[in-house]
Image (cartoon, rainbow, N blue to C red):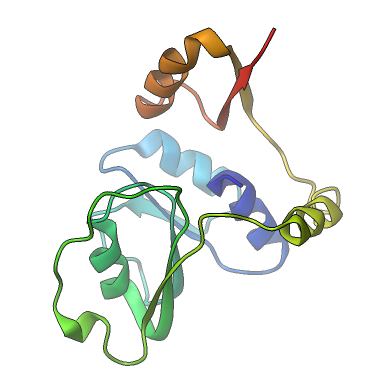
Length: 157
């Protein structure tokens, strides 16, 4: 599930969403606000207040200590990607006060069913950009360089 879908569902559920993007990516910050995020900034910034939880989708291990630093005591950092670069060493005080780090790389069938139950109520708005399978590298490059908002989808003909 991509972050832009999660932001819409969380907003619908009355949760407050603070979105972080790559430094200087004001286009994605505006996109996050259009989906219900009450604040959006880049990953080098501190949020306007301590967070209860942080979901990391980017495969950048250096974001883990930054997310821990942004948490309230008892907060949780969830690493939600399939892979991530090495997490750098960090001071134990970032983990102190019952902060946690979890990895959740796969969703269950029940997770999918729950999303399908709530999606029409939100309603979830998707931005899908199809690419033929042979153009997978182009899709990844376009995604990495912010050439579209939403998700790239590979198609087989």
